[in-house]
Image (cartoon, rainbow, N blue to C red; front, top):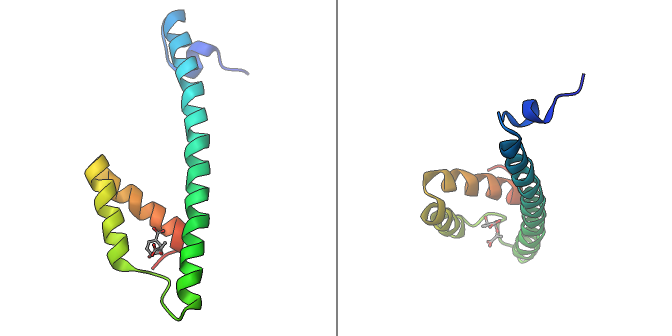
Length: 95
Ligand SMILES: C=C(O[C@@H]1C=C(C(=O)O)C=C[C@H]1O)C(=O)O
């Protein structure tokens, strides 16, 4: 059984269905771009980590990570810190 547009969106008028459907398309496009940017960030981070490890250093640099956590927290509040921690885990693995 296929869900109706009203069921899919939770809206109770055709106008609201249209608004929600259009806005969801924009969200899907934004999510694709965000995922692409995260993948690009992972690749750039890998270049830095490899250069440091090859030079005899460590993969992780905690003072730099603190800077990044602060940047996200200033921009997005407390959940920004959680988001930055997830990004760092994606980029350098778990510590
Ligand atoms: C990319 C780096 O290496 C690691 C990964 C980081 C990141 O993905 O932002 C930050 C600090 C390091 O733990 C760096 O030192 O800049």
